Structures are given as C-alpha cells and as structure tokens.
Image (cartoon, rainbow, N blue to C red):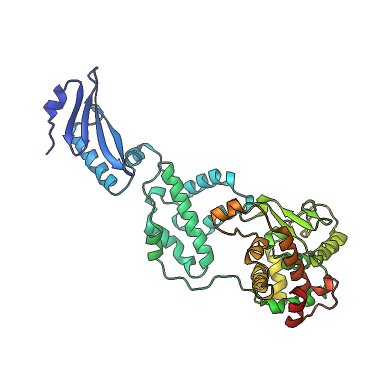
Length: 400
C-alpha cells in the first residue's frame, strides 16, 4: 500500500514526497506537480519522469505505470526507453534494416554494404520483414533462420549476425527493448554439421595443377587464378587489382586498405613466377586499369569465373583453399622460416595486441624469400627452373 493518498497529493506543498517502491511526487515552488520513478539501470540510478499531476496521471495511474516500469528494470531493460516507446513510431524490421544499412555503410566497403542488405532481403525479410522491429524476438529470429541454418550454414551464421546488428541498432534508436541473446537463438536451432572450411588442394598436387593450367589458353580468368595461387591472395583482391598498385622493379603489389579484409594496407612480395603472369596479362590486356579485366570494358571478373576454371578441371578444391595449400607447404617444407612470416604473407594479424604494438617490421625480406620459394615450387617453369613438375625431394632441396 502506498504512503500517499489522492487528498495528500492534491494538497501537497512544494517538496518531494515518497509513495514507496521508488515512486515520488515532486512539487515545484510554483505548485506544479509531477511524478518521478527511481530505478537502477546497469548499476546506476535512473530517474524516470511519469508526467504531471493531475493532467497526465492520477495517483493510481502513476502507481500502475511505475509498477510496469519497475518490472522491466528488474529484467535489465532500459525503463526510460520503454516509457518512450509509445511516443515513438516503431518501424518494421525491413525499415529498421534499411535504416541500419544507411548508417553503417558509411564505414563499410561497397561490397560489404551490398552483401549486408541483399542477404537480408533474400533470406530474412520475406519471413519477418513486415513485423514491427520491437516484436522480433528469439522465436521470430529462429523461424527466419531455420531454412538456411543446415542447408547453408556459413550464410546462416552471417545472417544471424546481421539480424542481431539490426536489432541492436533498433535498440539504440529507442525502437525496442533488449535484444534476444545469441545463445537463446542457437539453442532453438539444430546443431550445424562440422566443417565449413574451404576445400584445399594438397600442396604436393599444386605444381601439376599449375602445369595443366599453363598449357591452356591465357584467358583473363586463368591468369587471375594462377596469380592468386602464386601470391596466396584472396581472389577478390586479385580480381580488383590494378596496375597502379604494382611496382615490377621493386617486386611489390601494394593492396590498399579498402581491398583488405582486415582494413589494413598490405604489401605483397612478388616472386618471379607471379611477375611472369603479370607480364602476360600486360601484353594481352594492356597496363592501364584492372590487371585481369572482365569481359565488359572496365568491369571486374566475377567471383564465379575462377571457380568455373576449377570445376572445368574436375577439381573439388576451392580457389580460396590455395591459401591453405600455401600455409601447409610453408609449415612442412620451410621449417626454418618462422610461422609468423607465412601468416604475414597471408595478410593475417599475428601475435597479441601487445606483440603487435612492438612488432614494427613487416618482415618483408623474409616474406620475399618465402614467396620466391613458393614460386619455384609450384611454377619452376615460370621461375627459370625448367619443367613445371618437381618431386617433393627436389622441392625440399630447392627451398631448403
């Protein structure tokens, strides 16, 4: 039972009067009266205005609203945001997704922004797009993900992260309360199959594959694939590579931060074999703009172009898997080269945050030696070393 009565509230003089359970009546010197609820949010006191008396809320109405907001606060919700929900026009999930995209894309690459929006439109919007974003709970997210969770596990994980990103943005805008816990969503879905890594060709088989490709027509796609293997790069980085990034004399390919997954500029040390591929591309397509252009003027190769070459060669390995081939080769065939060097060659971050702060060198000389050895191993014919088929024993001698 509260301490105040309607009569006490009506006759209250300037000051603050407690009704109990955090509800207070404040009376200004002017005589204006208002309700305030005091709760705890994230370990701090939060004073929530509940409107004036009697215009906005009577004593009974103030108690009713206070009880509702106290319950939400005990669950960890932001009671102020909950109070204001009725004042705010709550958008649908689709509208919230579009608003999230407009804001977040300012710090994304064009590719990342397009992927974010398109994947949600394709897989999530048809299922929950019309729902108010504050009504999207764990059950709704689970239902939206269920069709892709097992069939396309890698895509489904990205979709889950992107849905949560929309819901967190909606919370920050005051459109909803707490977002569902990731664990609650995972617990409501079947266990995904193990695996998911990109299929990789055993490094011992790469020289023979290179020989086969070198014996075929020099198309833009095939040269891009060979260059991808020889530099251990990501295919997207190769497909978007431009001549202005290459210094043949210095034997470097400087990839700007915008091209990189880690958003850091990266300098690739080029071996003789990769330089030979660049020279072939220059002769065929010119040395202006894209190194490996698409079929239309100034267009990039599609990501499927390189994959089609793999399938045409009856290979189950993926293009991205050649990075694993390179890493396995470096570990087994180049034991005197520190593992950190191979990781840097792959443009991976190495060491702890503290180690990164003290490591000022990019180990370029060691990376050059490593990439030279990789070029000699997979493409000796492009490295001035005769045929493009070598035994592992011979490779050990030439790379040791």
